[in-house]
Length: 62
Image 1: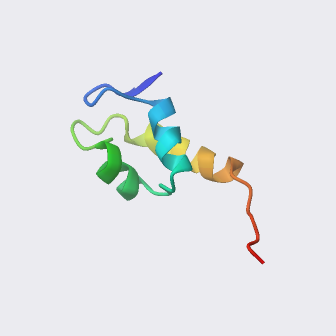
Image 2: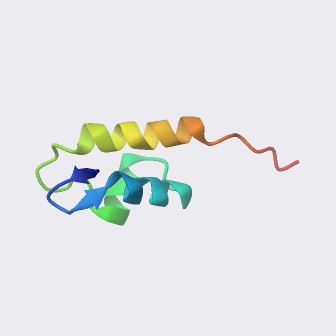
Image 3: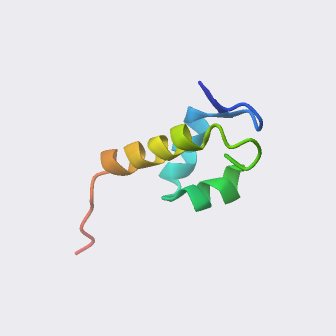
């Protein structure tokens, strides 16, 4: 589904960059440009980032 119509960014693209380590809207905006034009997609994009962070299990490196 398209999240950002201005930049043609989908929820799958947002999840892909989250898998690569993006954890904040600032990081997401710098990588994809989400919410940098009209801003209407900001809330949904932020929810996807939060949702992904919650679903990623914590791994203890020790």
